[in-house]
Image (cartoon, rainbow, N blue to C red; front, side, top):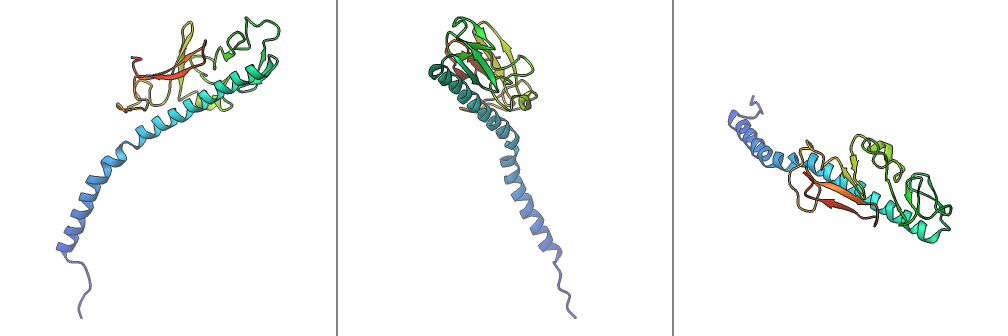
Length: 170
């Protein structure tokens, strides 16, 4: 009776082929975490930009009293030169997007609390600096073109509502 089994040589060939495939595939999958962090950061930044423009549009159209962001209210009709409820009534842009450093987007995004561990911020006079999952120090995300990476930051300009990626924050 003849046995039907793999020979030792056939098994070695299969192991060698699997080794070659693994050598090619592993480097391709190594950047998945970095790409996921950068994509998550870009997605959040896009949502923030949309929310800022939505608040500004509401300011233009409304009679100064309106709800913006995550159920924030603006009382600009009382005095158009004040920052009422974190909204800059003279420029029509949110003065603050959240509470720095721990709740960066709590005012502007409805899911702002869920981003507390991923993002942080610091405030200057007219500029607020944000760093997300890819741009924080120690994120492990290496230099990417047109994507956030370690050492980058997002700058929010309170006077004109711009939210832009700055690649020289370190």
